[in-house]
Image (cartoon, rainbow over all chains, first blue to last red; front, side, top):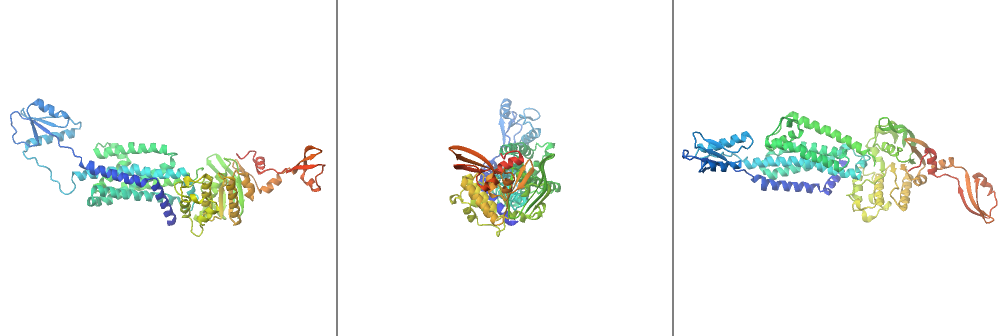
Length: 330
Length: 281
Protein backbone atom coordinates (compact mmCIF):
# COMPACT_ATOMS: atom_id res chain seq x y z
CA UNK A 1 0.00 0.00 0.00
CA UNK A 2 2.79 2.43 0.90
CA UNK A 3 4.44 2.06 -2.52
CA UNK A 4 1.21 3.10 -4.27
CA UNK A 5 0.61 5.85 -1.74
CA UNK A 6 4.04 7.39 -2.34
CA UNK A 7 3.63 7.07 -6.13
CA UNK A 8 0.39 9.04 -5.83
CA UNK A 9 1.96 11.60 -3.49
CA UNK A 10 4.87 12.17 -5.87
CA UNK A 11 2.54 12.63 -8.83
CA UNK A 12 0.20 14.98 -6.93
CA UNK A 13 3.20 17.01 -5.80
CA UNK A 14 4.29 17.34 -9.45
CA UNK A 15 0.76 18.40 -10.45
CA UNK A 16 0.71 21.02 -7.71
CA UNK A 17 4.12 22.27 -8.86
CA UNK A 18 3.02 22.52 -12.48
CA UNK A 19 -0.24 24.18 -11.39
CA UNK A 20 1.86 26.84 -9.59
CA UNK A 21 0.06 26.05 -6.34
CA UNK A 22 3.17 26.57 -4.23
CA UNK A 23 3.84 29.87 -5.98
CA UNK A 24 0.32 31.00 -5.06
CA UNK A 25 0.83 29.93 -1.44
CA UNK A 26 4.22 31.68 -1.21
CA UNK A 27 2.78 34.80 -2.85
CA UNK A 28 -0.12 34.82 -0.38
CA UNK A 29 2.27 34.40 2.55
CA UNK A 30 4.43 37.33 1.43
CA UNK A 31 1.45 39.55 0.62
CA UNK A 32 -0.35 38.85 3.90
CA UNK A 33 2.82 39.31 5.98
CA UNK A 34 3.65 42.60 4.27
CA UNK A 35 0.10 43.85 4.83
CA UNK A 36 0.13 42.84 8.51
CA UNK A 37 3.60 44.22 9.29
CA UNK A 38 3.66 47.38 7.19
CA UNK A 39 0.02 48.45 7.21
CA UNK A 40 -2.34 46.79 9.67
CA UNK A 41 -0.09 46.59 12.75
CA UNK A 42 0.60 50.33 12.52
CA UNK A 43 -3.03 51.35 12.18
CA UNK A 44 -4.37 53.23 15.17
CA UNK A 45 -7.20 55.67 15.60
CA UNK A 46 -6.53 58.90 17.48
CA UNK A 47 -8.63 59.38 20.57
CA UNK A 48 -11.61 61.74 20.21
CA UNK A 49 -10.59 65.42 20.33
CA UNK A 50 -12.55 67.12 23.13
CA UNK A 51 -13.38 70.88 22.96
CA UNK A 52 -14.34 72.94 26.00
CA UNK A 53 -16.35 76.18 26.04
CA UNK A 54 -15.86 77.71 29.47
CA UNK A 55 -16.55 81.49 29.29
CA UNK A 56 -16.50 81.90 33.11
CA UNK A 57 -13.25 79.91 33.57
CA UNK A 58 -14.87 77.67 36.16
CA UNK A 59 -12.75 74.64 35.30
CA UNK A 60 -9.13 75.58 35.78
CA UNK A 61 -7.69 72.17 36.60
CA UNK A 62 -8.63 70.29 33.46
CA UNK A 63 -6.65 67.78 31.44
CA UNK A 64 -4.13 69.18 28.98
CA UNK A 65 -5.89 67.17 26.25
CA UNK A 66 -8.89 69.51 26.38
CA UNK A 67 -8.96 72.15 23.65
CA UNK A 68 -10.53 75.44 24.73
CA UNK A 69 -12.77 77.44 22.37
CA UNK A 70 -13.96 81.02 22.63
CA UNK A 71 -17.62 80.79 21.65
CA UNK A 72 -20.47 78.33 21.48
CA UNK A 73 -20.53 78.81 17.68
CA UNK A 74 -16.90 77.73 17.51
CA UNK A 75 -17.74 74.71 19.69
CA UNK A 76 -20.53 73.71 17.29
CA UNK A 77 -18.19 74.13 14.31
CA UNK A 78 -15.40 71.99 15.85
CA UNK A 79 -17.73 69.12 16.74
CA UNK A 80 -19.39 69.05 13.34
CA UNK A 81 -17.05 66.30 12.01
CA UNK A 82 -19.02 63.54 13.73
CA UNK A 83 -15.96 62.48 15.72
CA UNK A 84 -15.02 65.29 18.11
CA UNK A 85 -16.88 65.91 21.38
CA UNK A 86 -17.72 69.32 22.81
CA UNK A 87 -18.40 70.33 26.42
CA UNK A 88 -20.29 73.52 27.10
CA UNK A 89 -19.95 74.61 30.75
CA UNK A 90 -21.52 78.08 30.33
CA UNK A 91 -24.64 76.90 32.15
CA UNK A 92 -25.18 75.32 35.56
CA UNK A 93 -24.43 71.77 34.35
CA UNK A 94 -22.02 70.75 31.58
CA UNK A 95 -23.69 70.05 28.22
CA UNK A 96 -22.15 67.48 25.87
CA UNK A 97 -22.41 68.31 22.19
CA UNK A 98 -21.50 65.85 19.44
CA UNK A 99 -22.86 64.23 16.31
CA UNK A 100 -24.06 60.72 17.09
CA UNK A 101 -22.02 57.81 15.74
CA UNK A 102 -25.22 55.82 15.25
CA UNK A 103 -24.36 53.33 17.99
CA UNK A 104 -25.56 54.39 21.45
CA UNK A 105 -22.84 52.48 23.34
CA UNK A 106 -20.10 54.32 21.39
CA UNK A 107 -21.81 57.68 22.06
CA UNK A 108 -21.83 56.82 25.77
CA UNK A 109 -18.07 56.04 25.67
CA UNK A 110 -17.36 59.33 23.91
CA UNK A 111 -19.39 61.33 26.45
CA UNK A 112 -17.85 59.52 29.43
CA UNK A 113 -14.35 60.04 28.05
CA UNK A 114 -15.00 63.79 27.51
CA UNK A 115 -16.35 64.21 31.04
CA UNK A 116 -13.35 62.36 32.48
CA UNK A 117 -11.05 65.02 31.03
CA UNK A 118 -12.93 67.71 32.97
CA UNK A 119 -12.39 66.11 36.32
CA UNK A 120 -8.65 65.39 36.33
CA UNK A 121 -5.66 67.56 35.50
CA UNK A 122 -3.31 64.59 34.98
CA UNK A 123 -5.09 62.11 32.80
CA UNK A 124 -3.57 58.68 33.45
CA UNK A 125 -3.09 56.07 30.76
CA UNK A 126 -3.80 52.39 31.33
CA UNK A 127 -0.68 50.37 32.05
CA UNK A 128 0.07 47.53 29.63
CA UNK A 129 1.46 44.45 31.33
CA UNK A 130 3.33 41.87 29.24
CA UNK A 131 3.54 41.82 25.46
CA UNK A 132 -0.15 41.43 24.72
CA UNK A 133 -0.55 45.03 23.72
CA UNK A 134 -2.75 46.74 21.16
CA UNK A 135 -0.41 45.87 18.30
CA UNK A 136 -0.31 42.19 19.26
CA UNK A 137 -4.10 42.13 19.52
CA UNK A 138 -4.32 43.57 16.00
CA UNK A 139 -1.78 41.07 14.73
CA UNK A 140 -3.69 38.14 16.23
CA UNK A 141 -6.99 39.31 14.76
CA UNK A 142 -5.81 39.98 11.23
CA UNK A 143 -3.57 36.88 11.05
CA UNK A 144 -6.53 34.75 12.11
CA UNK A 145 -8.79 36.34 9.48
CA UNK A 146 -6.29 35.96 6.68
CA UNK A 147 -5.49 32.36 7.60
CA UNK A 148 -9.18 31.52 7.75
CA UNK A 149 -9.75 33.08 4.34
CA UNK A 150 -6.71 31.31 2.87
CA UNK A 151 -7.84 27.91 4.15
CA UNK A 152 -11.54 28.35 3.38
CA UNK A 153 -11.28 29.89 -0.06
CA UNK A 154 -7.81 29.37 -1.53
CA UNK A 155 -7.31 25.83 -0.17
CA UNK A 156 -10.71 24.84 -1.52
CA UNK A 157 -9.74 26.22 -4.92
CA UNK A 158 -6.30 24.53 -4.85
CA UNK A 159 -7.51 20.95 -4.55
CA UNK A 160 -10.31 21.59 -7.04
CA UNK A 161 -7.91 22.94 -9.66
CA UNK A 162 -5.74 19.80 -9.41
CA UNK A 163 -8.80 17.54 -9.69
CA UNK A 164 -10.31 19.45 -12.60
CA UNK A 165 -7.02 19.01 -14.44
CA UNK A 166 -7.09 15.25 -13.84
CA UNK A 167 -10.77 15.10 -14.76
CA UNK A 168 -10.20 16.94 -18.04
CA UNK A 169 -7.37 14.56 -18.92
CA UNK A 170 -9.71 11.63 -18.14
CA UNK A 171 -7.01 10.18 -15.93
CA UNK A 172 -9.31 9.58 -12.94
CA UNK A 173 -10.98 6.80 -14.97
CA UNK A 174 -7.61 5.08 -15.45
CA UNK A 175 -7.20 4.83 -11.67
CA UNK A 176 -10.34 2.68 -11.63
CA UNK A 177 -8.40 -0.16 -13.28
CA UNK A 178 -5.12 0.27 -11.40
CA UNK A 179 -4.26 -1.84 -8.36
CA UNK A 180 -4.79 1.10 -6.04
CA UNK A 181 -7.71 1.69 -3.69
CA UNK A 182 -9.97 4.72 -4.01
CA UNK A 183 -9.26 5.58 -0.37
CA UNK A 184 -5.52 5.75 -1.06
CA UNK A 185 -6.21 8.00 -4.06
CA UNK A 186 -8.22 10.38 -1.84
CA UNK A 187 -5.83 10.21 1.12
CA UNK A 188 -2.75 11.11 -0.91
CA UNK A 189 -4.35 14.35 -2.07
CA UNK A 190 -5.75 15.20 1.35
CA UNK A 191 -2.43 14.60 3.08
CA UNK A 192 -0.53 16.80 0.64
CA UNK A 193 -2.96 19.69 1.00
CA UNK A 194 -3.09 19.22 4.77
CA UNK A 195 0.70 19.41 5.03
CA UNK A 196 0.72 22.54 2.83
CA UNK A 197 -1.96 24.20 4.97
CA UNK A 198 -0.18 23.31 8.23
CA UNK A 199 3.15 24.65 6.95
CA UNK A 200 1.40 27.78 5.68
CA UNK A 201 -0.32 28.44 9.02
CA UNK A 202 2.92 27.80 10.92
CA UNK A 203 4.85 30.30 8.79
CA UNK A 204 2.07 32.90 8.76
CA UNK A 205 1.71 32.69 12.55
CA UNK A 206 5.41 32.76 13.41
CA UNK A 207 6.23 35.53 10.93
CA UNK A 208 3.41 37.80 12.11
CA UNK A 209 3.09 37.02 15.80
CA UNK A 210 6.77 36.52 16.48
CA UNK A 211 8.57 33.36 17.51
CA UNK A 212 7.67 33.24 21.22
CA UNK A 213 4.06 34.44 20.85
CA UNK A 214 3.55 32.35 17.73
CA UNK A 215 4.85 29.09 19.16
CA UNK A 216 2.83 29.62 22.35
CA UNK A 217 -0.47 29.41 20.46
CA UNK A 218 0.69 27.18 17.60
CA UNK A 219 -0.66 23.81 18.88
CA UNK A 220 -4.21 25.24 19.07
CA UNK A 221 -3.88 26.90 15.67
CA UNK A 222 -2.54 23.76 13.99
CA UNK A 223 -5.43 21.74 15.40
CA UNK A 224 -8.00 24.20 14.00
CA UNK A 225 -6.06 24.42 10.72
CA UNK A 226 -6.18 20.63 10.41
CA UNK A 227 -9.95 20.55 10.94
CA UNK A 228 -10.68 23.42 8.55
CA UNK A 229 -8.20 22.19 5.94
CA UNK A 230 -9.74 18.68 5.86
CA UNK A 231 -13.29 19.99 5.67
CA UNK A 232 -12.48 22.45 2.89
CA UNK A 233 -10.33 19.99 0.93
CA UNK A 234 -13.05 17.33 1.05
CA UNK A 235 -15.69 19.89 0.03
CA UNK A 236 -13.47 21.06 -2.85
CA UNK A 237 -12.83 17.43 -3.85
CA UNK A 238 -16.51 16.49 -4.05
CA UNK A 239 -17.49 19.75 -5.79
CA UNK A 240 -14.75 19.32 -8.39
CA UNK A 241 -15.97 15.83 -9.21
CA UNK A 242 -19.69 16.56 -9.01
CA UNK A 243 -19.65 19.75 -11.07
CA UNK A 244 -19.32 19.44 -14.80
CA UNK A 245 -16.84 22.22 -15.55
CA UNK A 246 -14.72 24.92 -14.01
CA UNK A 247 -17.32 27.62 -14.89
CA UNK A 248 -19.88 26.01 -12.58
CA UNK A 249 -17.21 25.60 -9.96
CA UNK A 250 -16.19 29.28 -10.20
CA UNK A 251 -19.79 30.30 -9.50
CA UNK A 252 -19.92 28.08 -6.45
CA UNK A 253 -16.54 29.43 -5.35
CA UNK A 254 -17.87 32.98 -5.58
CA UNK A 255 -20.87 32.06 -3.46
CA UNK A 256 -18.66 30.33 -0.92
CA UNK A 257 -15.98 33.00 -0.75
CA UNK A 258 -18.27 36.02 -0.61
CA UNK A 259 -21.71 35.09 0.64
CA UNK A 260 -20.61 32.53 3.20
CA UNK A 261 -17.39 33.94 4.64
CA UNK A 262 -18.45 37.62 4.65
CA UNK A 263 -21.21 37.31 7.32
CA UNK A 264 -18.83 35.18 9.36
CA UNK A 265 -16.16 37.89 9.33
CA UNK A 266 -18.71 40.59 10.07
CA UNK A 267 -20.19 38.70 13.00
CA UNK A 268 -16.84 37.56 14.33
CA UNK A 269 -15.05 40.91 14.10
CA UNK A 270 -17.57 43.68 14.61
CA UNK A 271 -19.67 42.18 17.36
CA UNK A 272 -22.82 42.78 15.34
CA UNK A 273 -23.77 39.14 15.67
CA UNK A 274 -27.35 38.13 15.18
CA UNK A 275 -28.98 34.98 16.54
CA UNK A 276 -28.94 33.19 13.18
CA UNK A 277 -25.16 33.27 12.94
CA UNK A 278 -25.04 30.46 15.51
CA UNK A 279 -26.52 28.16 12.85
CA UNK A 280 -23.76 29.06 10.38
CA UNK A 281 -21.18 26.24 10.44
CA UNK A 282 -18.32 28.45 9.25
CA UNK A 283 -18.94 30.85 12.13
CA UNK A 284 -18.03 28.18 14.68
CA UNK A 285 -14.91 27.22 12.76
CA UNK A 286 -13.92 30.89 12.58
CA UNK A 287 -14.52 31.51 16.28
CA UNK A 288 -12.53 28.38 17.18
CA UNK A 289 -9.66 29.71 15.07
CA UNK A 290 -9.99 33.14 16.67
CA UNK A 291 -9.86 31.62 20.14
CA UNK A 292 -6.86 29.53 19.12
CA UNK A 293 -5.03 32.75 18.22
CA UNK A 294 -5.81 34.04 21.72
CA UNK A 295 -4.41 30.81 23.16
CA UNK A 296 -7.82 29.55 24.24
CA UNK A 297 -8.41 25.96 23.14
CA UNK A 298 -11.97 24.98 22.33
CA UNK A 299 -13.08 22.55 25.02
CA UNK A 300 -16.50 21.98 23.54
CA UNK A 301 -16.79 18.25 22.85
CA UNK A 302 -19.82 18.75 20.61
CA UNK A 303 -17.78 21.02 18.36
CA UNK A 304 -15.13 18.32 17.81
CA UNK A 305 -17.77 15.60 17.44
CA UNK A 306 -19.60 17.58 14.72
CA UNK A 307 -16.30 18.37 12.96
CA UNK A 308 -15.33 14.69 13.05
CA UNK A 309 -18.73 13.60 11.77
CA UNK A 310 -18.57 16.19 8.98
CA UNK A 311 -15.17 14.89 7.89
CA UNK A 312 -16.42 11.28 7.90
CA UNK A 313 -19.58 12.18 5.93
CA UNK A 314 -17.65 14.25 3.41
CA UNK A 315 -15.13 11.40 2.97
CA UNK A 316 -18.02 9.04 2.20
CA UNK A 317 -19.43 11.51 -0.33
CA UNK A 318 -16.03 11.95 -1.97
CA UNK A 319 -15.55 8.17 -2.28
CA UNK A 320 -18.99 7.77 -3.80
CA UNK A 321 -18.53 10.56 -6.33
CA UNK A 322 -15.09 9.23 -7.23
CA UNK A 323 -16.46 5.75 -7.98
CA UNK A 324 -19.17 7.35 -10.14
CA UNK A 325 -16.62 9.45 -12.02
CA UNK A 326 -14.43 6.40 -12.68
CA UNK A 327 -17.36 4.57 -14.29
CA UNK A 328 -18.25 7.47 -16.62
CA UNK A 329 -18.02 7.21 -20.39
CA UNK A 330 -14.78 8.26 -22.01
CA UNK B 1 -10.38 -17.05 -18.37
CA UNK B 2 -13.68 -15.12 -18.66
CA UNK B 3 -17.06 -16.69 -17.95
CA UNK B 4 -20.18 -14.55 -18.17
CA UNK B 5 -23.64 -15.95 -17.55
CA UNK B 6 -26.95 -14.06 -17.81
CA UNK B 7 -25.32 -10.67 -17.32
CA UNK B 8 -27.94 -7.95 -16.82
CA UNK B 9 -27.19 -4.30 -16.15
CA UNK B 10 -29.29 -1.12 -15.96
CA UNK B 11 -28.07 2.45 -15.60
CA UNK B 12 -31.62 3.56 -14.80
CA UNK B 13 -34.46 1.59 -13.30
CA UNK B 14 -36.78 0.02 -15.88
CA UNK B 15 -34.24 0.50 -18.68
CA UNK B 16 -31.92 -2.43 -19.16
CA UNK B 17 -28.67 -1.82 -21.00
CA UNK B 18 -27.55 -5.45 -21.05
CA UNK B 19 -30.18 -8.18 -21.37
CA UNK B 20 -28.64 -11.38 -20.10
CA UNK B 21 -25.30 -11.76 -21.90
CA UNK B 22 -23.72 -15.20 -21.84
CA UNK B 23 -20.28 -15.91 -23.27
CA UNK B 24 -16.89 -17.26 -22.31
CA UNK B 25 -13.33 -16.53 -23.37
CA UNK B 26 -10.70 -19.26 -23.22
CA UNK B 27 -7.14 -18.80 -21.97
CA UNK B 28 -4.89 -17.35 -24.66
CA UNK B 29 -7.79 -16.50 -26.95
CA UNK B 30 -8.38 -13.20 -28.74
CA UNK B 31 -12.07 -12.51 -28.36
CA UNK B 32 -13.63 -9.74 -30.41
CA UNK B 33 -16.60 -7.85 -29.05
CA UNK B 34 -18.25 -5.98 -31.90
CA UNK B 35 -21.21 -3.69 -31.88
CA UNK B 36 -22.43 -0.25 -32.87
CA UNK B 37 -22.37 2.75 -30.52
CA UNK B 38 -24.72 2.31 -27.58
CA UNK B 39 -24.98 -1.44 -27.99
CA UNK B 40 -23.49 -2.21 -24.55
CA UNK B 41 -19.85 -2.96 -25.50
CA UNK B 42 -18.29 -0.41 -23.18
CA UNK B 43 -20.69 -1.29 -20.36
CA UNK B 44 -19.68 -4.95 -20.64
CA UNK B 45 -15.98 -4.03 -20.65
CA UNK B 46 -16.46 -1.76 -17.61
CA UNK B 47 -18.13 -4.59 -15.73
CA UNK B 48 -15.37 -7.01 -16.66
CA UNK B 49 -12.65 -4.58 -15.60
CA UNK B 50 -14.40 -4.06 -12.27
CA UNK B 51 -15.20 -0.36 -12.79
CA UNK B 52 -18.96 -0.81 -12.91
CA UNK B 53 -20.86 -2.62 -10.19
CA UNK B 54 -24.50 -3.30 -9.48
CA UNK B 55 -24.96 -5.92 -12.21
CA UNK B 56 -26.98 -9.12 -12.06
CA UNK B 57 -25.77 -12.48 -13.28
CA UNK B 58 -22.50 -14.34 -12.91
CA UNK B 59 -19.12 -13.02 -13.96
CA UNK B 60 -16.02 -15.16 -13.40
CA UNK B 61 -12.50 -14.04 -14.22
CA UNK B 62 -9.43 -16.19 -13.57
CA UNK B 63 -11.97 -18.79 -12.33
CA UNK B 64 -13.07 -16.54 -9.47
CA UNK B 65 -16.27 -14.50 -9.16
CA UNK B 66 -15.61 -10.86 -10.07
CA UNK B 67 -16.95 -9.57 -6.77
CA UNK B 68 -14.40 -11.72 -4.89
CA UNK B 69 -11.43 -10.41 -6.86
CA UNK B 70 -8.65 -8.81 -4.86
CA UNK B 71 -5.86 -6.41 -5.71
CA UNK B 72 -3.91 -9.14 -7.57
CA UNK B 73 -6.69 -9.20 -10.20
CA UNK B 74 -5.77 -5.66 -11.21
CA UNK B 75 -2.09 -6.60 -11.18
CA UNK B 76 -2.81 -9.34 -13.74
CA UNK B 77 -4.96 -7.25 -16.09
CA UNK B 78 -4.12 -4.49 -18.51
CA UNK B 79 -6.58 -2.03 -20.02
CA UNK B 80 -6.21 0.12 -23.11
CA UNK B 81 -8.90 2.81 -23.20
CA UNK B 82 -10.29 4.21 -26.43
CA UNK B 83 -8.71 7.59 -25.59
CA UNK B 84 -5.13 7.79 -24.34
CA UNK B 85 -5.90 9.34 -20.88
CA UNK B 86 -2.40 10.46 -19.86
CA UNK B 87 -0.98 13.22 -17.68
CA UNK B 88 -0.39 15.72 -20.46
CA UNK B 89 1.91 17.90 -18.37
CA UNK B 90 4.21 14.97 -17.60
CA UNK B 91 6.55 13.27 -20.08
CA UNK B 92 5.78 9.78 -21.47
CA UNK B 93 8.58 8.42 -19.27
CA UNK B 94 7.22 10.11 -16.15
CA UNK B 95 3.73 8.83 -16.98
CA UNK B 96 4.91 5.25 -17.37
CA UNK B 97 7.16 5.41 -14.30
CA UNK B 98 4.18 6.68 -12.31
CA UNK B 99 1.88 3.85 -13.47
CA UNK B 100 4.66 1.29 -12.97
CA UNK B 101 4.73 2.39 -9.31
CA UNK B 102 1.44 0.56 -8.73
CA UNK B 103 2.62 -2.88 -9.86
CA UNK B 104 5.03 -5.30 -8.17
CA UNK B 105 8.52 -4.90 -9.64
CA UNK B 106 8.59 -8.57 -10.76
CA UNK B 107 5.59 -7.99 -13.07
CA UNK B 108 6.85 -4.76 -14.63
CA UNK B 109 8.38 -4.71 -18.08
CA UNK B 110 11.26 -2.45 -19.07
CA UNK B 111 9.71 0.86 -20.10
CA UNK B 112 12.41 1.69 -22.67
CA UNK B 113 12.09 -1.72 -24.33
CA UNK B 114 8.32 -1.38 -24.44
CA UNK B 115 8.49 2.04 -26.06
CA UNK B 116 11.07 0.79 -28.53
CA UNK B 117 8.80 -2.13 -29.45
CA UNK B 118 5.99 0.38 -30.00
CA UNK B 119 8.32 2.48 -32.22
CA UNK B 120 7.91 5.52 -30.00
CA UNK B 121 10.01 8.51 -31.14
CA UNK B 122 12.91 8.89 -28.71
CA UNK B 123 12.94 12.69 -29.08
CA UNK B 124 9.60 12.86 -27.28
CA UNK B 125 10.56 10.63 -24.33
CA UNK B 126 11.19 13.52 -21.96
CA UNK B 127 8.88 16.09 -23.49
CA UNK B 128 5.38 16.65 -22.08
CA UNK B 129 2.72 14.35 -23.52
CA UNK B 130 0.85 17.48 -24.68
CA UNK B 131 3.52 17.91 -27.38
CA UNK B 132 3.05 14.35 -28.72
CA UNK B 133 0.89 13.44 -31.72
CA UNK B 134 -2.27 11.33 -31.33
CA UNK B 135 -0.45 8.25 -32.61
CA UNK B 136 2.43 8.75 -30.15
CA UNK B 137 -0.04 9.17 -27.26
CA UNK B 138 -1.79 5.97 -28.30
CA UNK B 139 1.60 4.21 -28.19
CA UNK B 140 2.23 5.45 -24.63
CA UNK B 141 -1.27 4.33 -23.69
CA UNK B 142 -0.59 0.87 -25.16
CA UNK B 143 2.71 0.76 -23.25
CA UNK B 144 0.74 1.47 -20.05
CA UNK B 145 -1.63 -1.42 -20.80
CA UNK B 146 1.32 -3.80 -21.38
CA UNK B 147 3.47 -2.43 -18.56
CA UNK B 148 2.51 -5.10 -16.01
CA UNK B 149 2.86 -7.99 -18.46
CA UNK B 150 -0.87 -8.77 -18.14
CA UNK B 151 -2.42 -12.23 -18.32
CA UNK B 152 -5.69 -10.65 -19.43
CA UNK B 153 -5.68 -7.62 -21.70
CA UNK B 154 -8.70 -5.45 -22.46
CA UNK B 155 -8.30 -3.42 -25.63
CA UNK B 156 -10.82 -0.77 -26.63
CA UNK B 157 -10.37 0.36 -30.24
CA UNK B 158 -6.60 -0.21 -30.18
CA UNK B 159 -5.92 1.04 -33.72
CA UNK B 160 -8.06 4.19 -33.62
CA UNK B 161 -6.01 7.30 -34.23
CA UNK B 162 -3.18 5.34 -35.83
CA UNK B 163 -1.93 5.58 -39.42
CA UNK B 164 -2.00 2.32 -41.48
CA UNK B 165 1.64 1.59 -40.56
CA UNK B 166 0.86 2.09 -36.87
CA UNK B 167 -2.23 -0.10 -37.14
CA UNK B 168 -0.13 -2.94 -38.62
CA UNK B 169 2.42 -2.50 -35.82
CA UNK B 170 -0.30 -2.69 -33.15
CA UNK B 171 -1.80 -5.81 -34.75
CA UNK B 172 1.64 -7.45 -34.72
CA UNK B 173 2.08 -6.56 -31.05
CA UNK B 174 -1.35 -8.01 -30.20
CA UNK B 175 -0.39 -11.20 -32.06
CA UNK B 176 2.86 -11.37 -30.09
CA UNK B 177 0.93 -11.04 -26.84
CA UNK B 178 -1.36 -13.89 -27.85
CA UNK B 179 1.66 -16.07 -28.63
CA UNK B 180 2.88 -15.41 -25.09
CA UNK B 181 -0.43 -16.80 -23.79
CA UNK B 182 -2.17 -13.52 -22.96
CA UNK B 183 -5.97 -13.57 -23.23
CA UNK B 184 -7.25 -10.56 -25.13
CA UNK B 185 -10.72 -9.05 -24.99
CA UNK B 186 -10.93 -6.74 -27.98
CA UNK B 187 -13.72 -4.19 -28.28
CA UNK B 188 -13.80 -2.64 -31.71
CA UNK B 189 -15.69 -1.14 -34.62
CA UNK B 190 -12.88 -2.06 -36.92
CA UNK B 191 -13.84 -5.19 -38.90
CA UNK B 192 -10.34 -5.56 -40.35
CA UNK B 193 -8.86 -5.78 -36.85
CA UNK B 194 -11.52 -8.27 -35.81
CA UNK B 195 -11.10 -10.38 -38.94
CA UNK B 196 -7.30 -10.46 -38.81
CA UNK B 197 -6.84 -10.88 -35.07
CA UNK B 198 -9.79 -12.59 -33.41
CA UNK B 199 -10.17 -16.31 -32.81
CA UNK B 200 -13.84 -15.70 -32.12
CA UNK B 201 -16.11 -12.69 -32.32
CA UNK B 202 -19.38 -11.79 -30.59
CA UNK B 203 -21.83 -9.44 -32.30
CA UNK B 204 -23.73 -7.34 -29.79
CA UNK B 205 -26.67 -5.08 -30.58
CA UNK B 206 -29.19 -3.48 -28.20
CA UNK B 207 -27.62 -5.20 -25.20
CA UNK B 208 -27.94 -8.71 -26.67
CA UNK B 209 -25.39 -11.02 -28.20
CA UNK B 210 -26.71 -12.04 -31.59
CA UNK B 211 -24.01 -14.54 -32.52
CA UNK B 212 -20.63 -15.87 -31.34
CA UNK B 213 -18.30 -17.76 -33.62
CA UNK B 214 -14.95 -17.58 -35.38
CA UNK B 215 -14.77 -15.15 -38.34
CA UNK B 216 -13.96 -18.13 -40.59
CA UNK B 217 -17.03 -20.13 -39.53
CA UNK B 218 -19.27 -17.11 -39.77
CA UNK B 219 -18.10 -16.46 -43.32
CA UNK B 220 -18.58 -20.10 -44.28
CA UNK B 221 -22.03 -20.29 -42.71
CA UNK B 222 -23.18 -17.13 -44.46
CA UNK B 223 -21.49 -17.75 -47.76
CA UNK B 224 -23.68 -18.12 -50.88
CA UNK B 225 -21.16 -20.73 -52.16
CA UNK B 226 -21.19 -19.00 -55.50
CA UNK B 227 -18.15 -17.84 -57.45
CA UNK B 228 -18.35 -14.93 -59.82
CA UNK B 229 -16.18 -15.29 -62.91
CA UNK B 230 -15.60 -12.47 -65.36
CA UNK B 231 -14.20 -13.64 -68.73
CA UNK B 232 -13.65 -12.71 -72.35
CA UNK B 233 -15.08 -14.90 -75.09
CA UNK B 234 -14.99 -14.04 -78.78
CA UNK B 235 -14.17 -10.44 -77.97
CA UNK B 236 -17.09 -10.08 -75.54
CA UNK B 237 -16.87 -9.52 -71.76
CA UNK B 238 -19.20 -11.84 -69.78
CA UNK B 239 -19.90 -12.62 -66.09
CA UNK B 240 -21.04 -16.02 -64.84
CA UNK B 241 -22.07 -17.23 -61.35
CA UNK B 242 -21.01 -20.81 -60.69
CA UNK B 243 -21.65 -23.02 -57.64
CA UNK B 244 -18.20 -23.21 -56.06
CA UNK B 245 -18.11 -27.07 -55.82
CA UNK B 246 -18.69 -27.22 -59.59
CA UNK B 247 -15.27 -25.62 -60.12
CA UNK B 248 -13.65 -28.86 -58.98
CA UNK B 249 -14.03 -30.16 -62.50
CA UNK B 250 -12.73 -26.94 -64.03
CA UNK B 251 -14.47 -23.96 -65.59
CA UNK B 252 -17.62 -25.34 -67.17
CA UNK B 253 -17.97 -22.94 -70.10
CA UNK B 254 -15.87 -21.89 -73.07
CA UNK B 255 -13.71 -18.76 -72.69
CA UNK B 256 -10.75 -17.05 -74.24
CA UNK B 257 -9.43 -15.23 -71.16
CA UNK B 258 -10.35 -15.10 -67.45
CA UNK B 259 -10.48 -11.47 -66.22
CA UNK B 260 -11.28 -12.09 -62.51
CA UNK B 261 -12.61 -14.70 -60.07
CA UNK B 262 -14.41 -13.58 -56.91
CA UNK B 263 -15.76 -15.86 -54.24
CA UNK B 264 -19.23 -15.06 -52.89
CA UNK B 265 -17.84 -15.04 -49.32
CA UNK B 266 -19.39 -12.20 -47.32
CA UNK B 267 -17.30 -9.70 -45.33
CA UNK B 268 -17.56 -9.59 -41.55
CA UNK B 269 -19.54 -6.36 -41.89
CA UNK B 270 -22.06 -8.06 -44.19
CA UNK B 271 -22.46 -10.80 -41.59
CA UNK B 272 -22.85 -8.24 -38.83
CA UNK B 273 -25.67 -6.53 -40.73
CA UNK B 274 -27.22 -9.91 -41.42
CA UNK B 275 -27.36 -10.78 -37.70
CA UNK B 276 -28.12 -7.40 -36.20
CA UNK B 277 -30.06 -5.74 -38.99
CA UNK B 278 -27.85 -2.65 -38.77
CA UNK B 279 -24.38 -1.36 -39.59
CA UNK B 280 -21.59 -0.59 -37.13
CA UNK B 281 -21.62 3.18 -37.38
